[in-house]
Image (cartoon, rainbow, N blue to C red; front, side, top):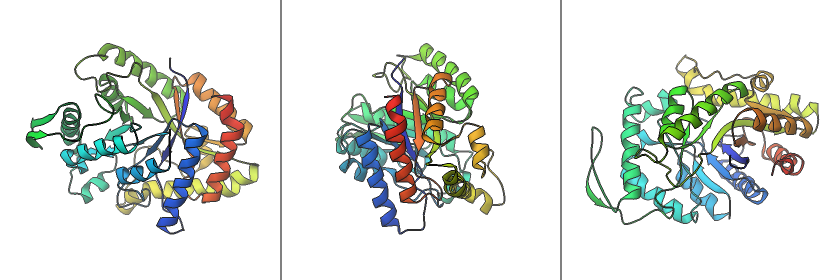
Length: 343
C-alpha cells in the first residue's frame, strides 16, 4: 500500500469580505499547504451559488500554480457536461505545463440539477454527456489528432498541437458518491475521493480495490501509469485551541456551510438527499468533520487511516463562516501539532 498522505479540498465559499480579498487569502493558505507538504490541493466547481466563488477552476489553479512549487493541483471536479471537450482539452494541457506537471484532473457530471439547468443541461442527460466527453478528453490527451463522432460531439481529425506534459495523461480522479460511481472509477483505474462514516468507507474501499485489480491494464484504464490508485475521503477540519472555539467559531461556521451547500435546493423548495446537516456535533458523530483539540484531531486522523482503508485524507480548512484568521489558526495547529505524527 502507498504511504498515507494529506490533501486539501476547497469550495471557496463566499464570505463577508471582497472577492479579491477572498482570493488573496486563499492563495496565502495554498502557499502554506505547499510549504507544509500536503500532496494535493483540490478545488470544487460550482455555479450560481455562494458555495463556489471560483466557478472556473482552471483559471484559479493557473494562478495557484504561480505561488506554489511542489503541491499537486486539480479540480475536484471539472463538470464535464458544461464544457466543450475540445476547449477543455487545450486548457488541461496548458495547465499541466503551467504547473510543471503537477496537474491532477478530477472529472464528474455534477451533483446539482439546478446548476446544470442554468446552463441548459438536463440532469437526466448529464451522465451520457459526461461519459462521451470523458472519452473525447482521454483520446485528445493521448493522440496527436482527435477523431470522434458521437451523440453529442463530433470532431474530425483535429490536430492536438498542445500536448500534456504528463504522459500518457495527467492522473484522472473521480468524486465517489454511491456504489455505482465507485465502480465507475474502479473500472477505469481512477484515483477516487469519497466521504461518509469510516465503516462505510471501509467496505467501499475494499470493493474499490478488488474491482481495480480486475481491470488494471485494460483498454479502459485511464491511469495506466499509476500502480496503485489513491483512495481518499474528504473531511471538514478545525483544530481548536479550546472548547469555546468549537462552540463559538466552528459550530456556527458549519451551519453557514450547510446554508451554502443547500441553497439552490432550498431556493427550489426541495432538499438534497446527500445527508447534509447544519449541526456540527452530528457531522462529527458521522465522521464527516474532524473537529477538536490538536490531541483529539490527531486521534481521529489516526483512526481514519487505521480503519477506513483509505491512504489519502483530504481536509477542508476554509469553510462556511470561518474567517481567514480562523482558518489560518486551525491550519497552523494542524501543521505543527498533528501532521508531524503522520508524515
